[in-house]
Image (tube, rainbow, N blue to C red):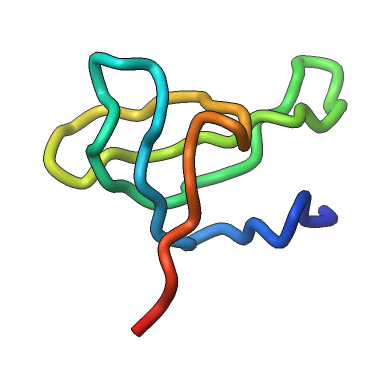
Amino acid sequence: MDNLQGIHIGDKVVILHPSHIAGKTGFIYAREMFSDDIVSKRWIIRIDSEDVIVSLNPKEFELLAEL
């Protein structure tokens, strides 16, 4: 599976949109797949502070730099 825009599973992110979860951090959990095994441009993100998983496009989150 190729990576889109340098995004990798396990990368730490901050969510920009939607507004009800903006500012929360999480990590890239997986690439979203359609039922016919076609790869989506969206990413599955697990939010750190909650037991929540969301599907976002790359414009809705920002990668955090590793220290």
